[in-house]
Amino acid sequence: MIRMQRNTMVGAVLTVLGLAILAAQPAAAAPQLMTSHGDQIPWYGADVNAMGGTGAALYRGGMSNVLNPAYLALEEGWRLDGGVSLDQHHEDRFQPLFDTFNSYVTDSGIASSRNHGFQTGFAAAHRLLDRGNGRGLSVGFSVADRYPFAYEFDEELRNPSPFDDPRDAIMQARNREITGTLRSFSLGVGGDLIDRVALGAAVHYNTGTRKDARSVRDFFVSDGDSSYATLDEHDLSGVNFTVGLRGVISERVEVGVAWESSFDATGDLVRERVGHGAWTADTVDGTVSYPNRYRAGLTFRPRTDPVTVLTIELEYAPWQDAETERYPGAGTQRLEDVTDVRIGVQHVFYNGVPVRFGFRHFDSYADRDAATSAFSAGVGAPVGDGLLQVSVELTKITAVMDHQFPYPDNYFGDQFVVDPQARVEDTRFRLAAGYTLAW
Image (cartoon, rainbow, N blue to C red; front, side, top):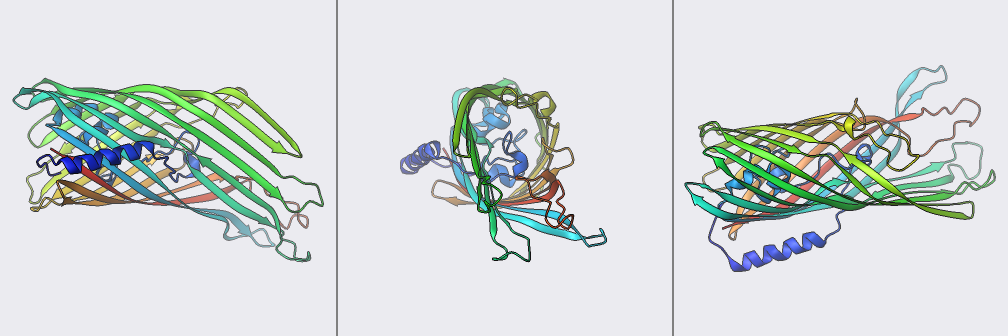
């Protein structure tokens, strides 16, 4: 990042951008596997995500509130960050196909979805107190989409009978749409304790509304109309905090550790049901629990040309401790502990242009047999008095999951047998742009 003199016009533009981001309603695209408690790979910024989401041992401006607030101590003046990302999510579902001798032939595609969405982020950091010799106290403010829920699934169930007229007629139109995000408003402070050691803390107010709508429209009514629609609307809010520590081992090596506390996001859950000419609605107290998070990272700055930064980070989240009932009578959802490995590399050339690469691999809190790999890259360019940054990410995940809606399996005796689960392949491509201004 290039730090230049303050430019009033550009600062005003960034302020307006930050207000616009605060008012924006994000609509991210997350895999179904991550819709119960939110996306595990949210977007914090083009520079952060380009380097695999690292930040436990690297300064990230105001976004250090979330990753490690001790690094706020490195801010020497003012820094503003803002940006937006565009997500493209592909979901393909497969079932095993067998021949008449019950021998496996291949996997057959049964459903395919293509969805788009976006996320936004804004952060600010400021040196509040300067005690000289590089020591001081800095504050940070950030707005981040911590746990996006958004997901959409559409399919048409068609008549497989070769004797009916018309053939391949639509029997049911099915849809499930989840919207909303748990967004964090964070305020943090970081300062130097002693030489080479800094301490920081941040408080997060998490708020959002999760809506889960399902609908089935039945066109084949000779056996009765099974159309219905349901809507669960859950207002969520909760408070937690993060504390972090930064230690400088040498001019080339530093380490960072952070702990983010658990919290319960609670609020009214309105449940509506429409079907067979009847409508019902009830309101209950709902809770979504989130676990503690433990982060540790190491940053190495070798003697290379161009200037290089290598950071390696590990995050552990005991999701099993967060098993709760979403609402009374819903039953307890069993979750899995998550280990998240992140690696980021940055090269800065003579003209001040950074080039970044990242890799990330983590477990799923919803399925112990599913894991996600994410590959990322990014570049920056000086524009005006700041740095324009872009990044790309590719994420892959495969899991075996229950069907969104049940499939009939009694056509022509046992000629059409439906497996109770499907192999679900998720591919997500994310393109993002951001702007950083420092003075």
